[in-house]
Image 1 (cartoon, rainbow over the protein chains, first blue to last red):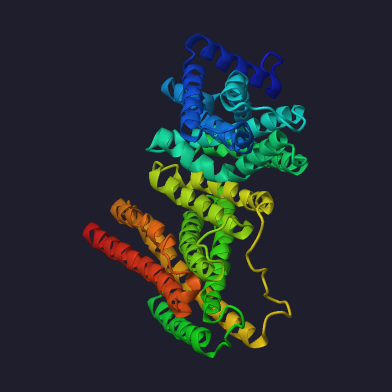
Image 2 (image 1 turned 90 degrees about the vertical axis):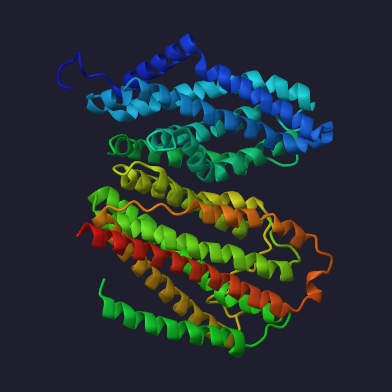
Length: 231
Length: 286
């Protein structure tokens, strides 16, 4: 770290990691394609099973949207580390002098971008299929979706690196991620429903989501190195 | 594990448990509105307290493990999580039995109920993870997960405030609890807490033996699967025509005690079975 050429800051390393992940995804499109198709299927199957009116759909859409995103996020997260495991990147990273936090943050940001892309593409589909229109201020949805997605992705990325190293691999991730995510899911679903129905201000839920994001981002950054090196 | 000391402690705890249960079922005054069903409270609350204490112990032991990397701390952590899950299961089963009589419903999405359920799920995922991970990395990953689970508890509690609450407020230490009931409750809490500690001790000794012979013990999934298949029976119980108040409240009371003791007993049997197998394996190795 003493030679000037070697001293890359965490920010720069993170940016490099994000760039690498985006380039890989751009070339293969493994994650986005499967996520999009899966989320689309969930939306369509839900609309078959419930067939709601505009009034009802305001009440239930918050839950449906987040279930679709939660499950497709799980798919994306498994994919993202599986790729690294196949090519021995994790081992390479363990012996590299770069701080592992940079790798974690890079992976998180890349996954965050993928899921945001998915959400932007899926939102019109939800609006069309469920006749959605927000009664409350719709700009609040942007905050809720940014925070909610980060809450899922930060823990998901952490648990995915744990689960790919277990015997059951991909199966393990939802088992670890879903229980810990329950309070975040409750907050984002309640907040989304409140905005859609315009009944009350979702301020309390947004605050709790923000607290959740801060607490778990810190915990992930502190424990990532330990988990990466667990043998 | 010091065998004589353990035996002496078991005898004392068994006596205390018997006395406490006798007090709860026979001596404590009958509650005015709910009648005898309220006596479920004397095994529900102590189980909750013991279970939550075990989860806290699990967190402490996990932090110590991350810091010191001692196998002892890991054994303390896994034993605490497992015993905690058993006591939490008792809470989640005796609670609905009481609720069916008092509220007319087995389950409502209430603040305390949801928090306990999420807590139970969190520690169950911890145990599942331990079973599925590779031998070398289990302890580190489990300890990290334990920290995550513990951080979740206050957030879960905050998030669940948005559910309306029906659950009776905690009355311990307040003047609204009848002094005689309080006396019985405290004795029950002490008895069940010591019972929990005793099982914990036993489980810890087992884990240490397991670590020493490096035995891999996988719980039979068949038992769990069979139990799961019985669950849809709940639907029939739910839609049975006679409203709950026409049923003798003692059915609920003894049902709850029976359920609680079945769980404790099954867990002890499971542990003895594991101990037996380990001993056999140890003997073969020598």
